[in-house]
Length: 159
Image (cartoon, rainbow, N blue to C red; front, top):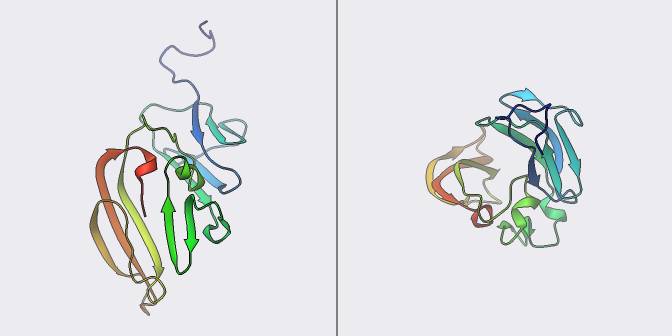
């Protein structure tokens, strides 16, 4: 049944998967504009629903996760002295809100990792290393930027 209040070319609501026990939404923007809860999006268990998505828009989410508290060994977690990711089969939703399905192929064109250089001397992710170096003037932290231009489902993301 057609909705008379919705233009024919307007996309339906977009549902992103996320584990609210692991991911705290701090902010969300579409094309650089802040979105408002209940007006532009809703949060419910396991879902972030964009009520008015725009085709071709850039969506940015800022989330907070605590890998040290993640005992499920899924998503981003700490194991001994290392931080690890395990995204198969549904672990990516413990990192951020995302359409976490195997038929949704995405590229990860810019993944920046930043850490204490002594505690975490190696920073790895999928793809090709674009840039690395000191992150602060005193060289206590360092960074690496990786690019993986090949489409893949989110469960194959690694950092």
